[in-house]
Length: 411
Image 1 (tube, rainbow, N blue to C red):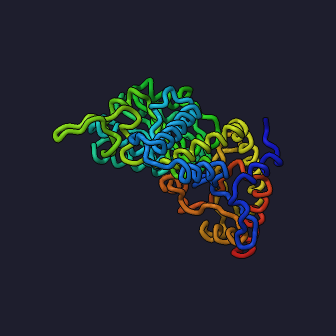
Image 2: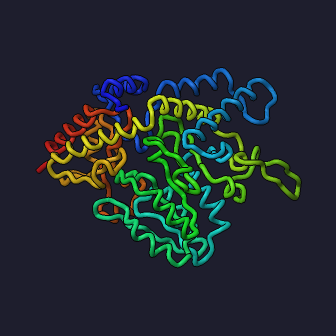
Image 3: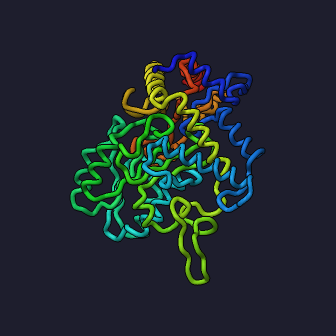
């Protein structure tokens, strides 16, 4: 099913924030790659647990604690089904995708990366999937190699084979969708090549899981992290990892609930996934993410992906008629819902400030991807990123705003 404009308007009405005016103008939110807005169903789910069933989970033997534990673990089961994880125990709740990727770099990387080993990442990585590996390589004396991006914004996968050929590569870390270029690399091919070379794969799913069907078993990867706050949920993240790998990894944090037995001279860790969830977790946030999963499933992830592809195609067509505007990344059909560009007439920060006067929210800066901007010789770009509550009228307002920028700052 293809979502109609009427469908999108009905979906938008589920988000209370769109009732707000910005500077007297209708809110046009084009920054969902940073964080999405929240539907009433998610807000209500969090309010309900705080007002009806809140208590700390797992350890209490009273009614509130049992209800909170059930709600928390039910949400974990929903998340596991959403990405087709083989086991619910492979779903680790963390603060955000960044923490999930750091968890792998520390808990797995410190045990397995040695001097002379190679870690491969790509030029299009978000800092969250770059800096942890960079710092691990520095600590261990390992090599950090970058898979390059072409001028057209595509990943040069052919460059992966030479890096894998000598057997020194231990891990390949790659985004599933670039948060700047929108590029969707062939993750299955990358994972297959890495596996054949004996390397693990770590996938940044922050820009993919909210926008398209994702099946971790079909991907064949070893780890994937994503953020709930980018998929209509609250501030919580998920790390999925293969059970065998998670079992052998030491804990990332120490404290309550991640232990089975503690003595003065020895501690035995808890079972998965509790081993990696030290202390009081974000209970209401996890429950809210479960509600967000329900909300997205009701719409249909295939429907969301197809609709966003159509909207991005329309956006690229409209932006190309704006004088002096340059778009980064591949053509429509090869990219996700993020469109980054720069204009000859103005700095990205000035563009964003002028657009805000008309209630249009875009991101301006390096988008936590400085090496990628350096590769293109740009200090910053403007990014418009879309979700299921955006429509062609939003794009038209963006384009009118950019013509206003030219009128104000043009020479």
